[in-house]
Length: 166
Image (cartoon, rainbow, N blue to C red):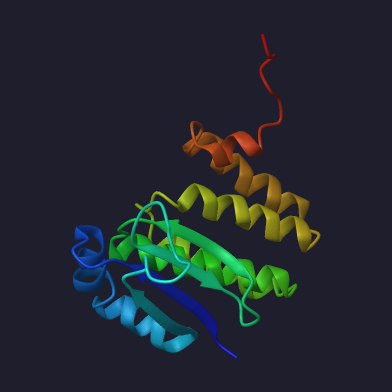
């Protein structure tokens, strides 16, 4: 059973058009989708009961339909690859497939170092290490997260000492 990728878009939406022309037609994205994802696309998402704040809307779901990730707006191919991989990693974590998730997240971190999603990737690497009873790996990864991405929300989640609230 494949993971499910749902993309809702509108006609005459510049971000939706870019998503179709640039991201979804990129060879790496096509290969990733074809290998692991069932793709569902709906245009004119105002029809029926669908109405979203911003378009396109990208949902990654597990085989049972549970939402793994949601992202609004145009996503360039480079970032979309990380979006897909983070969603897959979430699915693997839910299934307690920690080694597979670790490998996927490490590979993502190595192959997409300029992605704005790397702090989140590091966060989940630490989560996977923790769930796999490897506290040293958790500490090591989260130290990197705190040092390299100290202003990210993900680094704030793993701070050891919080500043006092005034």
